[in-house]
Image (cartoon, rainbow, N blue to C red; front, side, top):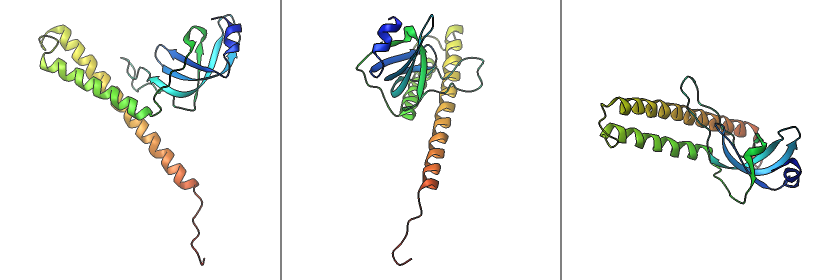
Length: 163
């Protein structure tokens, strides 16, 4: 779509995705001009988490959460009425379970001889992927625990009668 069409979508629901940073839905809040315009979306749903693993990366890629903004290129925004998941931790846990299952399938020989070089390579790939997803889950749990601690610290002291 061109920039004029995009500007008409400001304030409406859109689908925004990137090749490695995830797939989201939310409200288009800004269109940045340029030869290849970019859109800023306030996320209210997660369709797919980012690629949490890449060979050569020592830590998982951080995805966006509900309420955050993401800026994506003009070809990565389309109007939608879809709604995504709001629980990022649940998405990561489902992704980890999928990787564990595939890992077990390779071990059991479901995809052929587990000693075949291709199976060994894929087995290693799924193993590394599963580890990175587990790291992402651990990081998200720590983030949520930190938010809970901050919320508790921000609560005013409760007054008891007679004090």
